[in-house]
Length: 159
Image (cartoon, rainbow, N blue to C red):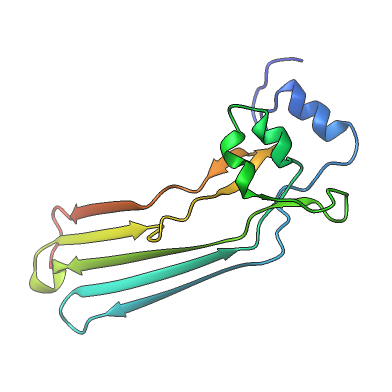
């Protein structure tokens, strides 16, 4: 195989998987929904927001038994919902709902070019994976509860 020059980079195992016959479309998901609310607290510069995301679960050709036998992927076994495993009823990743909350203060209303924001991501610390051993994307784990704080100062900004 010549060295890749650009575009999609696949190793030989991935090339064999996609040229060897039918394979699962790894982005097939029955339902995904996302909602958000934002409350701007009058003219104070304070705002509060929340978001909720539901995923019914992507398809996977991985089985819990195969994952348990692989030390690198054994952690993902509890997140596979076993179906018949056939072409029309493949195994799926366990469904999940993730909630996140944010609050911020925009001081530009007070002629200070500073914004401060705090985000609580995955607020209820739901564990899970988005996908497992995907041909095109690998394995993606849902990050644990995370608190992120940031400040943004705008130099030269006229308030």
